[in-house]
Length: 277
Image 1: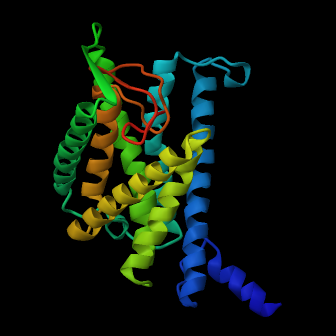
Image 2 (image 1 turned 90 degrees about the vertical axis):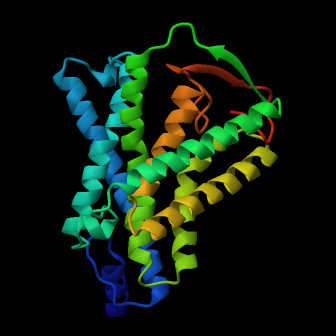
């Protein structure tokens, strides 16, 4: 029984113990991922609900702002999750934000932005040339203010996922396991939350979607190791999502509800080139 208690204490996400077999430590980091993810989401949701109640909205009775405002609240709300993750990192892992990946070379963020910008434009143009995405020109009524606000939202959203996967998980694993193992585990944990987006999709599309998630996660990991920080990965991640959704007007992770974009672009059918929904 004492041995079991020791194991439980070792793998608890509420301490920074590392002296244990590597496999047990890997299990501990996986537990930390889900603990931090769900914990921050629950606290963040509670804060948003409290905010809505404070401004006279009762979400329990369906009283909320319009879809655009709620979308902005959701995306900017990721700042709360980032704050909770950093707080966990400092209180329970006893590490600095630099050890999380937010080093002093914050300028590399813009290298990631540039790389992401080039890659998303090249990718979309190639798919358009294949005929599986059509471009119907610009939208007549472009909501520039909302699009700019969504850019800020995506900066928060991309950073949140990178803090969790390339920050917490990868930084904890890289010194205790081989780099391929650390990258493989952080990639797997990055993919799993996205799987719900594929419900009802064709098996072929799901396969290529997972392959693409693996590839982009490897890019994020490469940037993290190359610059010894998560700044570039955050910039790449955020600009990719923003350009895809609010500039090109394409579906993002199964979200086909378009609220504001510059270009009117639509998938033609559902195939492995355009990814369908």
